[in-house]
Length: 412
Image (cartoon, rainbow, N blue to C red; front, top):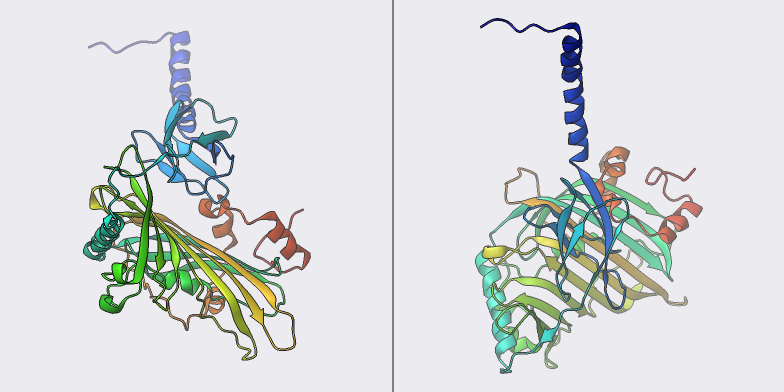
């Protein structure tokens, strides 16, 4: 076959195409990743919806909104169809054609239906099924990371800010163990420090297979009918044969332990979707024997990702809020408020060979943070930290008193 011959102009065009085609490919590659931003709200009240699910239809690509209802999602191309859902609201689809302006997504409140036949034992049956489901799947293990943030206030003034990223080993009921990846801490002089508050998040769980279930006072135990009063508030879904049951609970008057709250259980899979409990028990103490915590109220909330056919899913969120008075003879009581949340991400069932340690009351968070070299780049480039910035009032309060040091760069 004779060799092809190019004229001068043809040779120039050929060389130009050789130079141009890689540039076009790079341009297409650059356009292949589009960052979509937005906020999810209740359509009627306009209140933000934290931890709503946003997913690209037909793919495994998705994210959740932060505490302010904000989200950021990278999609391959536009237009894209997003499925937005949140417990207690009707799912909706959104067609995104441009990323120039942040999306403002409003979800309508879901209708709450009650079964036609209201059987008093029905909520007890649902809770028992959920408990048995946890028992069967307790050894299912997830590995990933978790971002923990804690803000402590005295008389509404922020005095502590702690942020930690853990490597986490968990199961469908609780955290099994953690190892510190990075941490940072800032505080101003105050009457008290609660830098070890994270131990409550790391120790709390719906169920513990290592404890004696016969004497357990937990809702998820064989003793639910003996220890609790339950009421089916409604079912979030199209009808009473499917959807998520909303069940309120409180301990019986004769039980010494006090707790009340709500649990949401998927009727078809028996998975616990969300759990919220309020209890007037806080066993914390200070180094000053004259100080005492009174009028305590601890609110705990847990959310789980949908598990599909497995009937269980990994933890998505643990949120703890403590309000209490710090009293000391001869002094006015101080109003203490501690707010913390733990957000789980990058989770899978792939085993990670790390030294996970179960939380102990002897743990000292601040000592562990100081023992780990501080890496500013880790925090500056961490998308999970960026998606939930600290409140401006907290940042301002610490900047005024110079408490941040290297934790947060000062504004120019």
